[in-house]
Image (cartoon, rainbow over all chains, first blue to last red):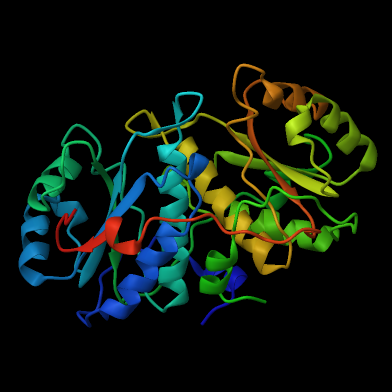
Length: 176
Length: 176
């Protein structure tokens, strides 16, 4: 198992294909557990998860996911959020689900799998997230805002380029 | 060094006091590096960080942080965000900084320190975040939305209670 810093360093947004080796339920539970262990504003626990590993359900989901986002992964985890006020009537559910997603992404890498945070493409005007939610029987007070494919990569892993540390981080004052 | 799953499990929102043992720069760099390695919408890299470990600067910040949030930690990391459109004119900077914060929180725990995500209390009508930004010379196009104290806890670590797994996570469909 990778150390926490190794997993953070190895995580990348993998957009290639996947082997069809199934992900054991035990690992999917570990990954979801990692997500649920993320903090939430005033402990409102606004994030819920649905893992999909049933071929029939996966195929139904693939029908509504646009061609360019067809995923060959043997499983995926859908992220649901509820806009529950946490502090002074302010909702922190975006922060909550983002922390949960990041926990899952690094847990996925730590367990030897790959994934990608798919959000913008399913919450835009095509409302793919809503179509996925309907297939999964998600009630109206939850919003399906993201899914994470989970599987073993069958293509090389690439890491995104980044600005140098000193352009984004400083000590004791803003330095740009 | 903890494994990724251990660090995720051990992380908690620590609100107790800190020992005055300084956090080595080397560790602060590792923590900030973990934050900057988080994904961002279309790789816009909207999150920047300022670590504060200088006593004089810390004292100035403590003057504007409300009494109940006075922190005795020997260092803290301030999180800055820029609202840069990423996908179809939509900004994902809240997601970006939340993922960066979560990476840092679990890196902090993995390195033997404690912390707490302080956001709601510095972005409300008292505008503590803006006062902190002024002290640190942060330009107007960046918003200081969170700080993380970093230090060694001098009080017992408590973990927040959570709903059982089966109330927040399911397989192949919504099950509540």
